[in-house]
Image (cartoon, rainbow, N blue to C red; front, side, top):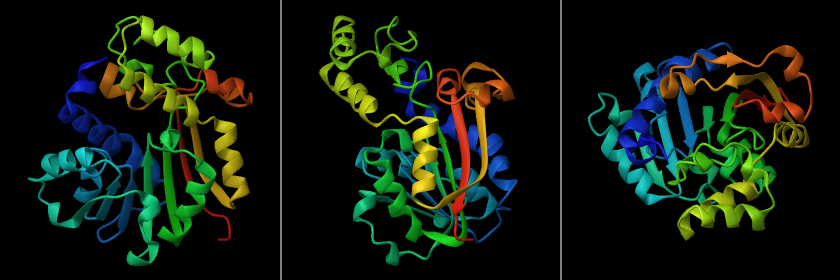
Amino acid sequence: MQKRHLDRKLYFEEQSITTRDYVIPYISQHLQLKRGMRVLEIGCGEGGNMPPFLEIGCTVVGIDILESKIEKARRFTADHPQRHQLTLQVQDIYDVDPSTFEPFDLIVMRDVIEHIPNQDRFMAFLKPFLKEDGLIFFGFPPWYMPFGGHQQVCKNKLLAVMPWYHLLPVPLYRRILRAGGESDNKIKNLLANKRTGISIERFEGILRQLDFSIKNRTLFLFNPNYKVKYNLPPTRQVPILDAIPFARNFYTTCVYYLVEKASL
């Protein structure tokens, strides 16, 4: 477990840096963000992705199912000069009536889709929230990448740095985590990740099934977030490896997607 997993303000600040330096420039290749645009972040957590959008002048709504996360988001953004443009609410997204909101120009889902059960149902549920010419940004680690199980959050120092063992069968994976001294709650969360982890191929299959169109897609050998974490520059996957279905999941640490409704 790294310091950022305990110090949530540090994690908040790291999220802001990556969104400001990499996510927004990536989105801006296809959607010129400007004052007054409406941005929805689902699974906003402590809110680190939202300040860079506020700085542009966007109106931002952040929704998370956990009250503890939203409480931190409120505290961390309390002194932001554009705080009045930010709405934070504790709610299961399935309990939100899309008609209560004006449609959004942009929906942001960074490091969230891999934690959501029934992703096909969820992504279909997103459509009414999005303007007809709006975009959705997805950023996530493919399940088969070295730490796709998020085992870096383990307290055991060896388990936190071991790659790929999250791919083992559930009984063996659970046994290893218990032998390493991980708590029952940590094991429960890591096994939940195993149930919801998503591959590049499954994600793109859901997009096709639900009539979403890929506006842009980038596979990264080194996640842009590794710059602030480890001072490793973001590195795109080499084309020859990008082109190998399934195998590319094992050595791609992050994918960025911009998608739109295919009916456009």
